[in-house]
Image 1 (spheres, rainbow, N blue to C red):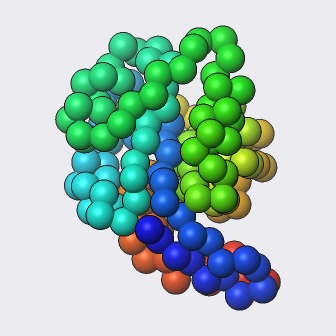
Image 2 (cartoon, rainbow, N blue to C red):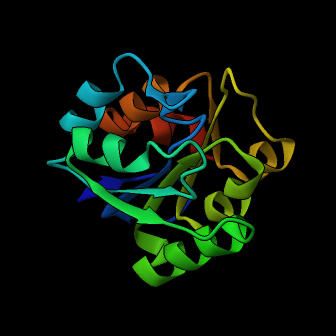
Image 3 (cartoon, rainbow, N blue to C red):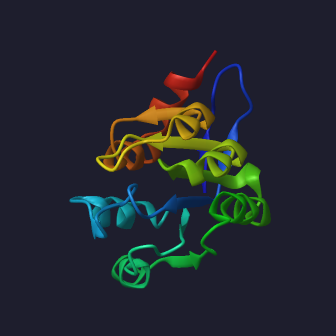
Length: 156
């Protein structure tokens, strides 16, 4: 579990990291450099879940290479399916990371939503729905390893 004390706000007790795959962890279906190591370093802190409609048909391979849970979602209703998944796990226990339009609801529902800028683009709706915005996925994952950075950014 990851506890983040944010002055002026409720303390977060996070158990799950839920990540989009395409554009967030990958570029053109290939893991971005450093992602595997960063994910591996978080496994002892958070239970990690991947969500994907598997547009590029690489989700199974990516999840297997990272040795983490993959939840495939139905194409066409991705935003709602991702939001439902967050709800089922328990919004108050989740940090979610994404960048696409279908990640906006997921980030808004999660206790902590992190939007990453991506070479594939970042949806404005997702940017607005996030609690934090970072330049890339490695920065997002490093924040979780250094939670005082999150507290410093979100304190009121």
